[in-house]
Image (cartoon, rainbow, N blue to C red; front, side, top):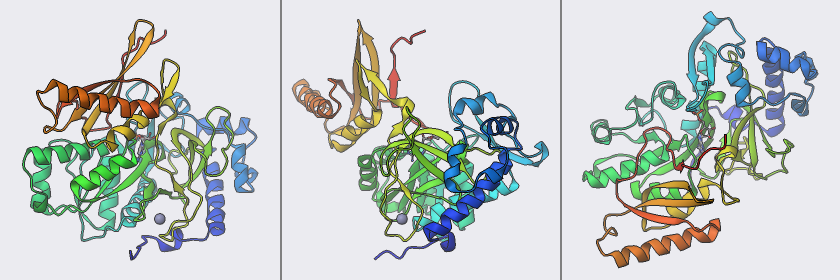
Length: 438
Ligand code: AMP
Ligand code: ZN
């Protein structure tokens, strides 16, 4: 039987009514704090929430209007700042590749609170100060680097700030320092595994036992594939820069949903079209209110991420509700000849097929008036033969397996191992080459 360990047992196993009372108290603090920012001073007053006293119960949260990404952008650079500029000590920005960045500022206490949530998350997976932690993710404006780095140090692990990329150096560091835990995107972990085979790195020469994988959506089959190929435990890590970064929701050793740390965040699931709450347990858009940051308050922030809450309690004893694996974002849905398709539906099929390699790419194009969906898949060297008949049979098998669940007839292209692009940061799985409507 697993002996579960808690970083902060009093809070992690707090009974739900106490936890809700704590949330209410922190929500009042968050509203009071938000009223100090130019953006919320206006937005909240217009909604009749001109004082924290308006919030009497947690249900009063619904009196607060939603905040969207474009609000944050419009508020750039200081519309959401609630403390004097000389109190802030760090900023991070979202990885969004277009438009004005969304920038979050932290004061010293904000960094300490955030770090404690990351430490709690790491500890929940069974790690402790004897672990050696290699943080194989981009450092910089992206929060996954410094956020996990600080959390790992807080737990007392030896932290190796290797950053992403350069697999040869990653293997050297793993061997030299006996790395036991890594953090990376799931696609980078798959790439690491392919490289291990290519470079003849023996699994026995490494002490790896766990990985934290996040920053991008991945399926349960992808998790299982990484676990089997690398012989490690993989834990799902969810966060976003608007809510500090990592340490928002994390899997415990039960690996069955991600505990949302409800003393730091209030989570709601809404229907993105009607904006009404969905029924308990249903899937919708995750909306988060940050209860743990002073310098840049965010209330009822629409994450665009799709998830839902599990309703039954977790065997680990934590009372914080668990989110289901995030399958994608409301804005990454593709419409192919009128049929809705989430890239995660394709990933599920690809990763469940043993013939498929570790990397794939979805390409959408216009062919005349119709949309054309192509799935490019790497296949393992053993299967990649010169025998056209064998390759065609494999292509046909993959095409049929894909077509059934997605109801779209895709074109399948088989590619040699290592020939599709690999990204060190978030992987771009979709190339939509259709002309944009102007
Ligand atoms: P960023 O603000 O650049 O850190 O990006 C945050 C976004 O990455 C989230 O809003 C999600 O869309 C995505 N993301 C982060 N972690 C996960 C995860 N474990 N599963 C699925 N998507 C994730
Ligand atoms: Zn649990």
